[in-house]
Image 1 (cartoon, rainbow over the protein chains, first blue to last red):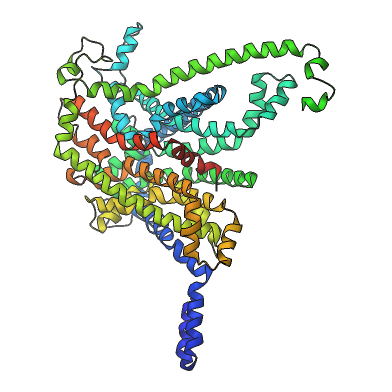
Image 2: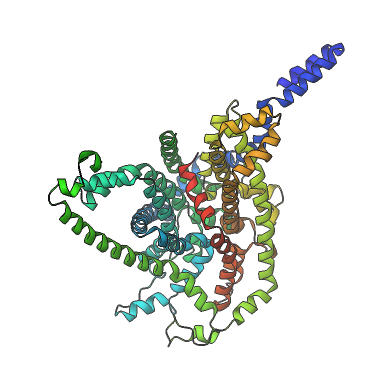
Length: 314
Length: 303
């Protein structure tokens, strides 16, 4: 806009071309212009590849299968009426909540244990325990898939060895659900561990010393010092992981591909099946849009937590 | 605190019974240490068992894999033939090559976009900069599974389905927001005096960025690069949706979809392929663990 006015000045007063062009130069050297140019690629990525597709998804979800007619909310209606989709909603929520709770508990426990041992050894243990997080999940799930294989299961071999019967890991709906959760917890718990360990290290030792002198037990120290000090980071991590787990695709795709009988389908895998594999793009878009309200609410709380933390650190 | 309460001498002199309590504290410590080590050993076994089992399987012949009588956790005749077979497979080499090109392009694009943007957002207050910084964080929270269907349409409209260039176009949505976010944090922690000194010496913005900010925030840049690398190497949703032709597939979807064919799986080869595919991020992690972890935790503790 400012460059327009400069151009106008240039056109109206040809005699004053020199001061105007130096004004142009000044404008080009101005902080906000440079800043705008520097952020332009970022703005185009966010605008063109996130905001626009999100809006486009809403539009798509209101078209018919061949994308020729506008049918309003019919896709959402049909989905909510279908038994399969209702089980998808249930399974997604069950999966996300159970997996995140377990990841948080395991991660907290491991971080705590890691914090207790001498600092020298911490690096090595941390290095080993973070390995699941480093391997691309699609590939490590392939290993799990093979470990769960009905006839060659190496996990069943161990279970048999201690005298229990074989488990139909991926064949029976409930066991399939549990398998998906196990793999997700295995993959995600190390992340929680690292986050909590960083938070534990930021709690000043004097607080525990003071509490010990006042006669506090270890449990009381945890309850009244550790948890309150870590509250913010715990909630940020849990909420963030809730988003990622809720929208998870790779583990379900590789491990069960939604089976048996679509009972382990989550939003993402079902959207993929309906939208890409069966070719009903508008309905697939509608499936993934069902995630949006929940994600928006969680994102709001994450942002609040992060802002609060930024203020605390400042 | 205790010293303040008992300035006259050692705390144990002043408080009767504290000596005994310290003794019980010591045994409590020892017990806690044992619990810690036992928990960590169990956790390490569980965490490392799947990759270890993949390695064991990859070293077995097909006959040994199919043999149900033995212990699956043992290898009787270790062999590297699965690795030779998978590396000799031109399709697999193609996946690897695609992954490398894809990842190098995405990392380069990501770092250029996010370093410039983070510099502007951290140092130049301008109209809407606060909103944009919040927007960056919010886009980081948008999962890829929410957007892959409209992006499928958009990429298809551009004629880039079944091409790694379509992936080069969309992968920055996975990497740019987080990298920008942590770079804002690193840049903001650089003292203002440094850029004031540079300004007085007559440096322009570009010189300030390349001569001061990038060198000083190098650990942050390394952490962000590692993040961009691991994310684009491991990305799964977009390639699965956009690529169906084996010769354009990157490793993740290639290994998962193309090496599994028919009813009799070549498990040994499959596991060898998956392990080789997982190797680059693991190597980066092994050598740059501290940067890796710094990047991981920076998202919530900085910015």
